Structure formats: structure tokens, C-alpha cells
Amino acid sequence: MKSKTQFELHRWIYFVILWLITMGLGITVIEIVFFPAFQWFFYDIPYALPTWNLIGRWSLGILFIGFFAGTLSWHYEKRSSGR
Image (cartoon, rainbow, N blue to C red):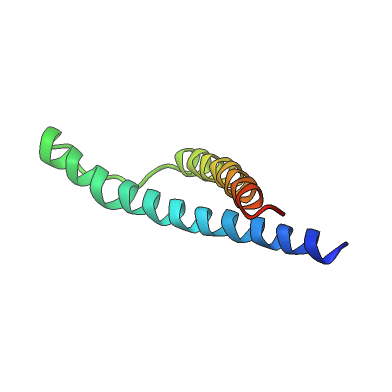
């Protein structure tokens, strides 16, 4: 693998991992803290942990969004830097 191509691959992986971590933390906070608080406040529904099915769907969504966002960021950086 050429050095330039390897650098671009590493940069793409960096953007994907950064997006996955950010989305994962954001979704976790929303799903575990804010959503149950709003349910309790507005509907007086007791808190219940998310099901494994819901967690699996969120994980796949975050994974696909991460790959998409990483790819877009990589293409933007590649185009703007002239490489």
C-alpha cells in the first residue's frame, strides 16, 4: 500500500471512530437519562431499561451513520487539501 493511500485510510478510520464515539455517547445519554426523565415528567410512566432489540437497532444505526459520516469527511478533506 502506498504511503499516501495508507495515510488517507488512517485519516478515514480516524473520522469514523471519532463519529462513532460521539454518536455512541450522545445516544447513550439521550436514551438512558433524558428520554426516561421526559417520560416520567410528562406521562408518569416508570423507567425501564431499553430492550436488547432496541439496543441492537441503535448500534446498527450508529455504525452505518459512522461509516457514512467518516466517508463524507474523508472525501471533503481529500478534496479540500488537493490530494
